[in-house]
Length: 322
Image 1 (tube, helix red, strand yellow):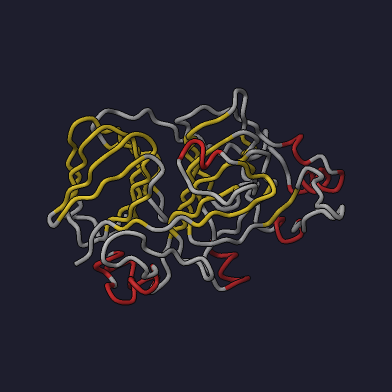
Image 2: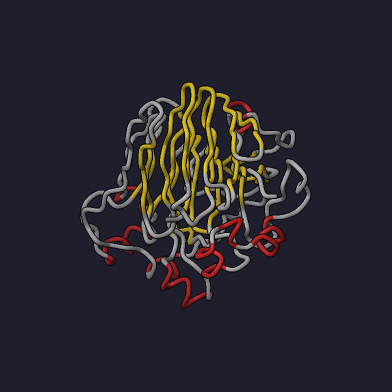
């Protein structure tokens, strides 16, 4: 019988990473390494998540989809994606600025790689005073003007730089030029793609003085230059209510604050549900058992579970495909 699944997080060393994933979310990290990401749920080749709780511990996500199919992910999702889990769920610790980058949309990714594009969203958990993102262009920017700044190495001059606070949320559709700024800890929900075109990397070099590869030619065709795009989807949570942040073809994300008891019904939803526990301690109860959930944990609710009761006090992101 399926039950809410916890997976073993996969820490990722990054040149811009730090130790905040341990300090703020309780993640176990390798010592003396700069860890920038914790992959919470992944079906990508080479990084398929492994169950860490219950009788299915040790099985990976692809194996579970093969056995349980629509009962795990939802019938329509299984019909479309097969054994490929459609989302990648992460926490990101940006101790330094990430590279300025862009991701292709579905059409371009299908043409170039036979896969899916990458639209994503961010939810800010913690940040340094004055921390900011690089998100879209600051005003109307033509392809020609963009190319001039890339050539001169002055790309950040034409990027919008919104300052952030904990609780801020942003939707970044494929084609958006973007970077996470220094001193930000956030949750990231994205399509299951790791195709990234790096455009600008702040002059960083490795120990041998070599910079990371840039993909400026590939990126030019991926960028959406349409003006007046809006990315901020911040909404204040309401106690014991689901507040929608993002609803797109790739995922729906809600923020929920719980105090006492809250019943979430999924009878009409043909999808798995993911909980990212951002604050507090909760107990999940369903027809068949209960499971604890603490800050920093991520839990996948199989599609066959029609109702979950949340008890305790905390805040979480609720993610599914509608």
